[in-house]
Length: 126
Image 1 (cartoon, rainbow, N blue to C red):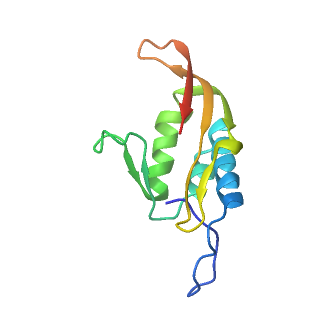
Image 2 (cartoon, rainbow, N blue to C red):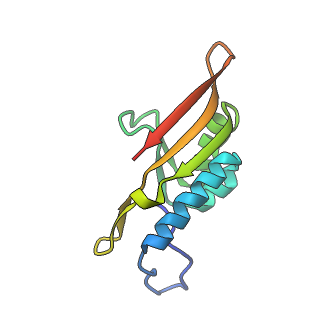
């Protein structure tokens, strides 16, 4: 789960806002581009579940900060380089009533193939 903020014990978390979502997605992109596993993990709560492949529940689910860090060390830091992340802020859909959002971003990067060659990849994610 993305972390909404640091509230004192016993207090309700602050409501999620459009600005919070934009800042979170931007921080995610910066952490990915810098391949900083600790920075990525800090974006999530300690009990977060990171789903990298929603259609592969056995091979693409990482739990907690330790699981998220492990995924970033083994999959991102070792297999990706030259990452350029761009958020489409104007395309963000935010529902204030439910505190949910759909973000749109793209990333251009090079990935290490099974034959140990680097290949350019572009993602457009919504």
